[in-house]
Length: 97
Image (cartoon, rainbow, N blue to C red; front, side, top):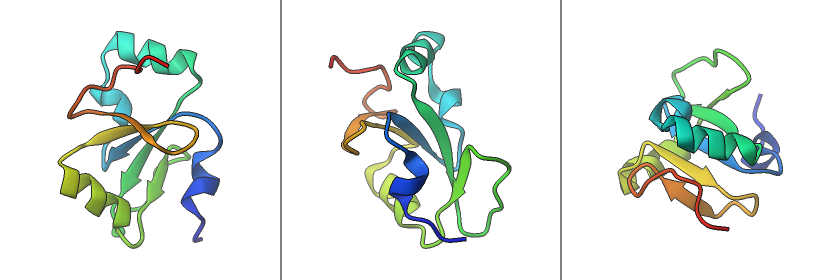
């Protein structure tokens, strides 16, 4: 079933991991901060994968996974307006809002 990414992300903060659970890249303090904002955590899997639950999505065209690879990041945090707020490369702490 193909769906638009915006439909899957919802309206709030989202942390996306490239074939990884982004929670595994957070410190306990960072996770608590993102949880306080009501963030969702989603793993982006390659087109050959099957999802294991509602917190995973398959990148059928591997556009997102290509973007992660191009910028050398494993996880990003997206603001509700879909701008990148943080990455594991620069630090996944909640930025000053």
